[in-house]
Length: 101
Image: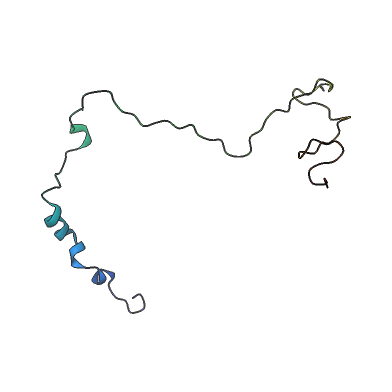
């Protein structure tokens, strides 16, 4: 179609043209005025629901400081001296999930 430079409208059936759609559905389509001229419906005004927006990126949580840890001069930071690594599979000490066998 493109190489031969044919008109794409020639491939559409005539029943899909605006003229014929108006003839077919004209008795059911009623034109309306602007939205400001519509009459108000009685009752409570219905509003769209408000959904909370999710923050993008990784969520950052403050690490809970254990009782035996000392707090350093920086607020919210704790020293990791003396901490041993734990396995997240079964909470074993001395190895992590990657090196567990």
